[in-house]
Length: 601
Ligand SMILES: [Zn+2]
Image (cartoon, rainbow, N blue to C red; front, side, top):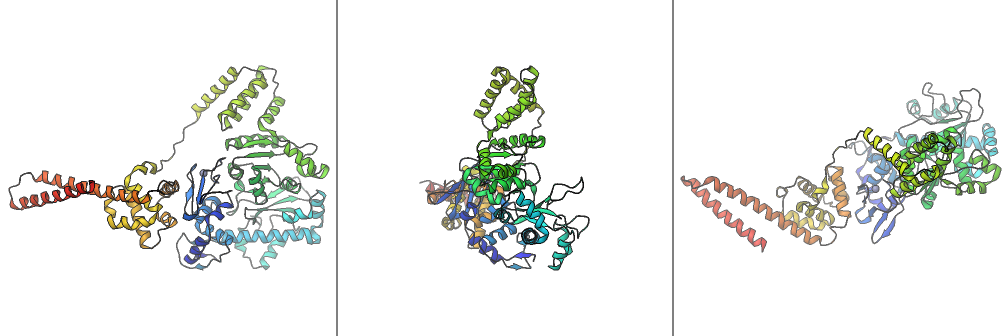
């Protein structure tokens, strides 16, 4: 049912969704005083600069400036979803039944087709699981997976399934359940050319779950290869609710362990990943039929708090190339990288079956640091007893040094290179620097669109006054009593004052409501940063009264300047009405001067 989420529901979600418990699902928070701190989920970091203030329902990162004033905003940013989708996610988490209306605005319009598709995948994956575990048609597939050493418990946990051989079965089945042709055609479960032909048939099925444990896509492994063109694995295509580049298989199962150990194992296949989990190595995830992307790494960097990645890819040529590329990507994200090398088997599942979980665990514990791995490969590739060989090794090792994120590591890696090649540090350094120089010249500098710079406003007394008011809104009464919109000279201050006035009129001066009324993301970020810094938490009353004084004073001075210029204009008038005006102005200027002087005292 598509429609608009009712205001009551939105309010109910806002009230129920406490920011600490929502953020805690993504970030390990530590309590300090009445606030919480953790490593920012929006950029990889090792020290906590992500601040959550429960009283204000707000969060802010002092590193990358991500911030917001409600749990809904946090979910929007972290899950990359729209406002209504974020409301829906939180409603589920806090067991709130949403109600809908047929009127509303784009902010509340909830397109539930993504949600419906996820429900469909969840349902179909359970049906496939039933075929594998309960139905005679899944018997061969079950024998196969058990032959690979996968236990009943694992089959259950990963909801492994079997898609029927009859390519028309799924369509018939879902039509009987009243799903429309139009909806099914867009679901990704059927051939794009023949809408009643199932995309997966006679395959061992691996549901791919999102971080909430809902099935969002599937991968299918072939059981009986008939033609040369039969692909070993088929994967769901990209869909509005599913993107390969930011989904990691088994992340929902691995997240807590990754966070605890600050280490993640990344492998290439569903079976590899499952074998790790069954062997008790529960921080393993896999890509879903794509190379490792920056988004994947960002997710890992957040979850490990900038910790360690163990790469466990195939040892064939393609696997080696993937390893090399992934090392650079992970290092650029500031992660430590190690390579798992499997002894006595080509993949983790084989090792688990042939040698047991213990051997697999030992292989993981014995993972080697990436620089050693790269050297080993390079010295196999090129003879290092010739100048040409040495040059090639160095040139292929330099990008690794580029990717390192701190100088100590860069220095040590240069040292390592000299040592391994038996070459003077000077020579290596010169080549490295020359190469960097040449690269710099070819890189076209990208222009970044200027963002309105609010930080310059920090010292502006009008802004300071209003930030103090936002920090403690009980002071707004005195401000609106003393000042009006026109008395603010700075455009941003005028805007903030109007926002506060609007919120006050609606009787809701809460921090999140004020943020919601602001016109730009940058403004919200600026006030969140300022208020969260605690700068305005002490002496608020004094900042407010001083601010009001100063603005009034400036207003009077402006008025005085205006009158003085008019007096100068009049000169020594002859006409009686101008004489009167002059008299009047002189009287006013005296009053204003008295006022200014009395304020100064
Ligand atoms: Zn951050």
